[in-house]
Every structure is written in structure tokens, then in C-alpha cells.
Amino acid sequence: MNVAKKIFFIVLLIGLGTSFAQNIYVNPGIKLGYMFGEKGGFVFGFELSITRLDDKRDFIWGYVFDYDMTKKIKRIHLGIEAYRMLLGLDVGPTFAWVEGERYLGFSFIPYGGAVLYPFYNYTFLFPNTTFQEIGSYIKFTLPNTNRTFSLQ
Image: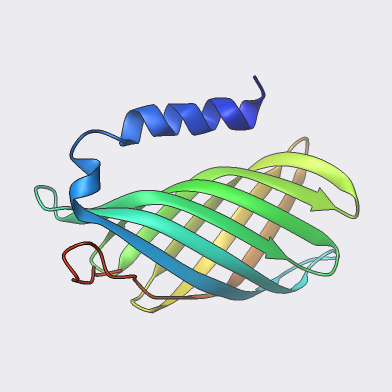
């Protein structure tokens, strides 16, 4: 079993309790940014997060899937996010293709806002490559089964 499958199953086991489905929100969006450095440039991508409002702890948490690209880099990021009082953090593994070479890494993405989410992305790719990026997500929330909208 490869690393991506192991991570996926661990996240699934930790996060999907019986209460998870009660307040689920699906949040699609686009990503626009700029990656610094020699292989950087303008970044365009898509993001989908599936979040849950935790009433007891007064925060939102969930899972994130990102696909983004520059002229030289394509990335897939799978993350776990938490969001409270207009500030959030997304962390998790990143799979990148840099000019045809495959890399595995880790991304740390603090963000803030509502509908328009400015972010900073720090990605470390093994063995020793880093990328820094700034930009914004533009996201909306699809109605859940109760036909209400979440805070994110």
C-alpha cells in the first residue's frame, strides 16, 4: 500500500465518526496566487473542502483537496483544516510534478477571510525543495440537507 493510500485511510478513520455527517458543508472554489522563485509564477487551481461545524468547540474543521499549477509545476494537496473566527490552517501531504519529476512533500497553509480567503502557502518537497506562495481562494458553500449555509 503506497503512502497516499495510508494517509487517506488514517484520515478517514480519525475523522468520519457517526456525528460527522450531521453538519457537513461542501465548499468548492478557485485559487489564484503567485509562487516566488525560479520555478514560480502565477498559480491557478481548484479547491474542494468538506467541512463540519463543531458546535461544542465553536470551530469548523474538515478535509481539503487542492489541484493547482504554474507553467512548470503541478500539485495535488490533501489536507486537514481547522477554521475559527475568520482564521484557518490547512496542513497535509502534497504531491508535485516539477518539470516531469515527481516529488512528495508537505504543505502548511494559513488563511483567513470569508468568501475571499487570502493565504500563504509554504510547501516542502523531499529531499530539499521549498516553495512559497501568496494568493487568495474564492470559495462558496453548497447548501446542505437542511438548505442552510455554513460560515465558510
